[in-house]
Length: 115
Image (cartoon, rainbow, N blue to C red; front, side, top):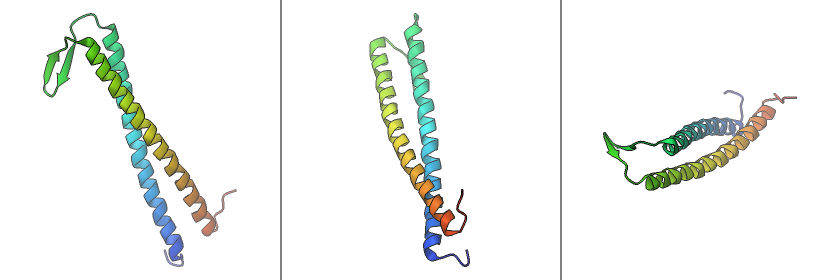
């Protein structure tokens, strides 16, 4: 990076850090959303179920006697996931804004203004 000012080097470093953070947050959000969809599918299948229902607990399968309690647990887990996903989405949007701003600043400083 010869000929690049220390300020520009700092901005490039910040840009790379924001890029890494954005990738990590996006990955977390995608995983959390997949888990949420899986919980919703589980709840839907539970609603259709007419036979005996079992729940996994570690390496064991335990017969469920209180379906309402199980449904409430699933609802609570889904709600918790939705709150976390919302938080990750806000974080992701904030990082996207920083990413874009740094990208524009760096491009202008390097004389590569996109038109």
